[in-house]
Each structure stands twice: as structure tokens, then as C-alpha cells.
Image (cartoon, rainbow over all chains, first blue to last red; front, side, top):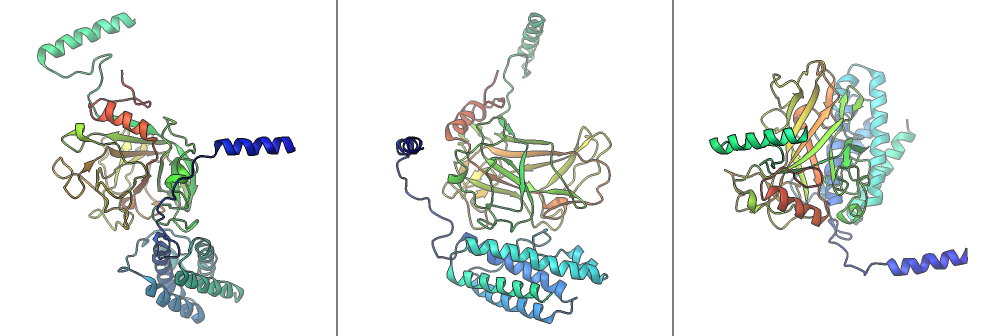
Amino acid sequence: MTVLLLAGLLSACQQAPPPSPPPPSPSSQNGYGATERAFVELAIATDEQALKLLDLADRPELEENRNVELAELRKLLDAPYVNNHAGHDMPGMPTDAEIQLASTSPDALEQFVHTHLTESLEVVRSAGSAITHPPTAEVVKLMERHRTAELAAG
Amino acid sequence: MKKRLFHIAAVLGLIATAFSIPVAAQGEPVRVAEFLAECPISHRLADDPIVLPNLAGASHFHDFFGNHSTNARSTQQSLEGQTGNCNPAADISSYWVPTLYRNNTAIAPTGVTFYYLGEGVNNPGAIQPTPYGLKIVAGNAKATGDADSIARWSCLHAGHVNPSKNFVTCPAGTMLETYLDFPQCWDGRNLDSADHKSHMSYPVAGGCPSSHPVSVPKLRMVLRYPVNGSTAGLRLASGTGQTMHGDFFNVWPRAEMERRVRNCINVVIKCDHNGNHG
């Protein structure tokens, strides 16, 4: 075992390439970078679409939470907002077809609200591990708290 | 048999010379500036390393071709040294498109070819190798109709069906296919841009504009899906057929790309998968 380890270490030393300078990162350390910008634009698109679905449901606290999030997200924008995801089948973002169906079926409405919460919670958690810009990270935490509480409330 | 063919080729060549008709006779190179890579589907993920970098699971679904490692966190550094499923194996670039569905069933393309072409500019001799690490998005994922779409859908083995920017009804025994041409003029500085588009441009009147002066091979993606009959229930993860778009992250080894541009594109010769010609 020791021999194997030593052999491995030696081989690792021999094969180690010379250190190269780190590549320029699209998300500058702790800055508002490409990942933050992409998340904020996606979250605005998702929340705006979710509001159309929640308008059909009797869950005023959810609408309130989405509106609070939208206000915070818009403060983070560093350029005019563009919806890059309209009409797309994005996780957590109800589609127009789903909203249409939910308007005629209470069961579908309940299911789509639940799916919005579970899927967007996954996206928010993914963002939580990728985003370093502190103000954006704060909004991510707020969105995670909202969804966790909303799911717990049924 | 071989001798006989050679004889016919020689005669054809003589006839062609006599009448000054360019004929691709046996053993003679085809005068089309082209090399290619065929890369079947590798994997499917709700990731997009260009549009939603580092945000795993945050995108609509994509079918990924080529490099097996591509995910939301992919970078030039993470992709290089990995393996892919392209023919030639040397091409470990990443390519991806929105997943096609019939209702809620995903349908993978069964034919996936990436052509690199010298057409679109008047001087293929000036085409430069595609820069290592270049990211290109083609098509309009936000298209709302024909007017803002460059998608093209047609039927393999059914040329009488008119191409359309949205899905077309293909006769039984044929396949739905889609073509997408990527912009081929580079600004010479940026491997990506905030909107993922403005560092690239399409040529104007046979040349690259002064804002994007570097001419690179035109990437043409051709996908064939095992789909025919009614278009009912067909949709892309990004919406209608008009929203077809493609993403390309170039990690062709530099020497392999340079050799093909020199031997196939600049001299206007059709090459095989290995970048060679007869």
C-alpha cells in the first residue's frame, strides 16, 4: 500500500504540468458576473410567469412573495431587462399552456403551483452554490426561504 | 473492375477538359470547401453552459453532441482533454440544441452532421481557423414567428415538400430534418459576448464586415429526426419549430482545425472525416 502510494505520488509529481495563470473568469470574484446576470434574468422571467398562475390560486402570500422577489431582482439588473426565456419550457416557470389548463381545472392548478415551487427551489439551490456576488446571493437566500416555507404550508 | 472504372474516369476527364466542364471524376477532388464531423447525441441535460453558465438544472432541456463532459459548468479548460463521440474522434467540441418533443416524449435526432464550409464569402483562401474556445449561438430561441426566425425544416428524401421555418409534415418513409447556419465572421477579439451574439456576424455581400473582419469556416448543422406524419404535438423545449437554435463551443485541437482549414477550406476541396481528400 505504502509503495503504491509513494509510486502514485512520484508519478503525480512527474506529471504535474507547470502552473499556468488562471483563465479570465466570466464571473469575476464576488462581482456581478455572467452567472449572476443569467440567474437574475431567469428568475425575473420565472416569477413574472408564476404570478399569472398564482393569480388563479387562492394563495395571496405566494403572490406577495413573488412581488417582493421581483422588486429585489430588478434592483440587481445592470442593463435593461430582456426576457430571454419567453415561451420556453423552463424548470419552475409555468408555460402558457399550463396556465390555460389551470384556469379550467382546480386539480391542474394545484399541481402546477406545486411544480413551480419544487422546480424553482431546485434552480434557486443550484444558484446558491454558483453565485458569489453577495447582494445576489442574499436574494437567492430569500427566494429559497420563501419556497421552503410555501411548500411547508402546503 | 477497378481498371475499367479508371478508364471511364479518364475518358470523362478528357471530355470534361475538351468542353471545359468541371467534373468530379474518379480520383479527382471535389471542388467544394468542406470538412465535417458527425456526432450523435451524447447526453441530455437541463443545462446551458453559454446562456446559463454554472446554473445546473436551470435551463430548458438540451440534447448535447460531441464532448461527453459538457454541463452547466463547462469551460474551455474543463472540456479540453475530455473525450467525445464525434467522427473524427479528434473533434471534442460541444454542440447542443433544444430537445424535440412529441407531446411529452423526447425524440433524439438519429443523424447529426456538422459541416464546416467555405461558402458564404467570396475569398475562401482568406478563411482563418475557428478560434480555440470560441462560443457561437445561432438561430433565435425567442422567435415569435417566421419574421424573426432563421430556422429551416424540411424532409429527407422528400424534396417536393417545401422547406419551412416551422415543422413540416413529412411523408411516410421520410425523416424530418433541420438545417442551421452559424455566423462566420468574427470580431477578432472576443470568444463570447454578453448577448452571446454580437462578437459574431453573418457575411454581407460575400465578405465579412469591417466590424467583424475575420472570416472563419461556416458551421452548418444538419439534424435528422425519426419523425414523419402530422406535426401535431411537436415542440422544441424552446417552443415552436421557429425557435430552433444551436450552440457551439469550439475545442477542436488547434492543429486539427488548422490542418483542415488549410487543406480543405482554403483550397476549396471536399475532405473526409479525417480531413483528407482523394
